[in-house]
Length: 264
Image 1: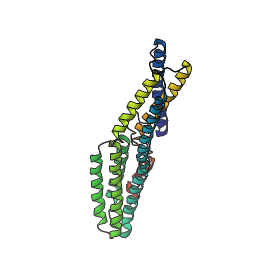
Image 2: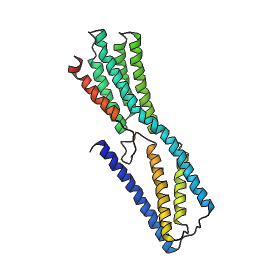
Image 3: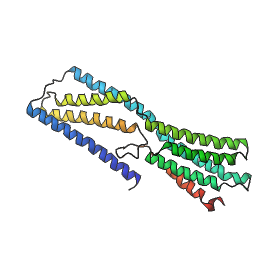
Image 4: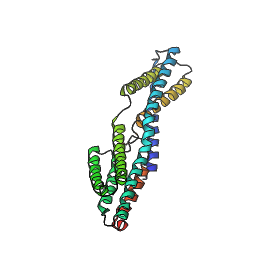
């Protein structure tokens, strides 16, 4: 199954999970109505509770979208840096025909494959950085034989790759303001319980409004939690992840460049 089909399947499953939770809430509402457990009466303070919960969710959504938008740029930047290094290294024999670049290109292709696997499966970052260190030492050995501008370009692209890897690692491991998340989850739970226990007539309309409000709040809260890690493709419950296609395409091109026939 390709990546696009898998993403669509995850979105359907995400919608299904929220719908099952909603059915449970509606069932509780029916039970409360039958047993006459409706102990709350809607008043203006109830509207204030809804507004405060929407404010918290808006605050969270605005915060996680900043990291998500930044995360969307990182795969393209990493792919560009990898291919720029490959082009620079391929061009070294033009300055000195005796230059041996096959080993460096093979290391670059191997690192790009490891980088893609790390972005897809969230493996250990230290192992990836050690592989990047080996690549940098190999490229520096080539660059020190050539003019300073060339050395600077190679080191700059390597620094960009290292910065991108570290930024992805930070985005993955950091939760946006955990205390606000806690407040949002508690607020959504309290609001949902309050809706279920409220005396709203007629009963059919109460089912509709409780269902719509609960569905929107719960789905938005779960979506915000998912957006907080745009590189969560390895997580079965993660739905909205940034596209890794630029890095995957770069890996394919670097594999061809590293083939013996392409450097002869």
